[in-house]
Length: 146
Image 1 (tube, rainbow, N blue to C red):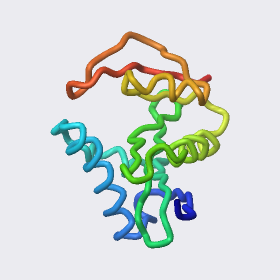
Image 2 (spheres, one colour):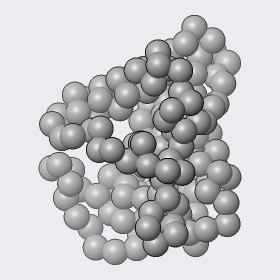
Image 3 (tube, helix red, strand yellow):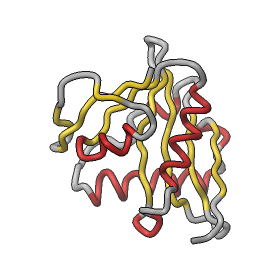
Image 4 (cartoon, one colour):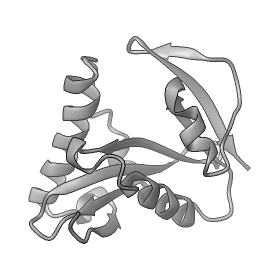
């Protein structure tokens, strides 16, 4: 596994080629692999305070990505956590989760987890906080970290 550099930046500060690779990874995972045709580009990446997070190999390959948002209620929101197939199981997404939590600061953090990943998010202090729901045909649970 190559050395990966973990980075973060607001949308406007991400180099165009890197941004393309980040968005391509999200589409590859959430739309193509999970067979969920939905508007992946939802406008939230461009919101004030939004940060894109990613892990990048020396050759420019984006190994994983996530985003950190600020909701209107003051909570931070982590989402769009995706890892390229070749990097899964290597702890890359966990590195991005820790970065996202550090960047969130001392506020509550929420996320909508695919239900089968609730245990993985629990490792970072998240607990289910509401009723399960289905989004784009995939079972999800709302989760919160105080």
